[in-house]
Length: 230
Image (cartoon, rainbow, N blue to C red; front, side, top):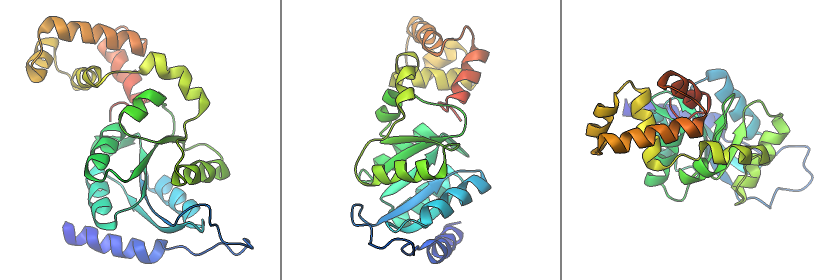
């Protein structure tokens, strides 16, 4: 497995190392050279984003990963400065992967991506993300947003602030939600998290209220739409 991943990284490096765009009369000096990793399990989306970013003069290498496990391995070997992570990636939710990557590499800047669902700015930042982009945005807008992050800014669409009060789940509420979505009963969640049943019931009620749902099935559907769970 490790050998295959290393070969993939070497191949990606040869293919993805980019040069300056010919139409630029002056080199882009506002942004330091960056190694970028795109994590998305949709092959065409990943290829499209990598091709788009590889044209930028400040991107020195653009690698790809299609699963959480591969993302961690590629990041460990290539040490990218910037990582784009899909909200739903094979093996893990985008939020959890964001947190794991930052725990391993505190220096990295992570941008979350989604094609449909959205996540509140406060929740994304609580997991360490410094940006959020929608895959359906115009290509130029995506490049601009990613470049701003590479320059040190935090980039979240203004519309996302409207979701903050609704989906600003705490860490404990997220834990309860993930267990509920996986099919555990309240007593089972209480045992798993070492909480009382009453506390779990309170957290469950709060999660339902914040998601605007009435039962587990609706909570699971809403959480998946927002990219809170894989």
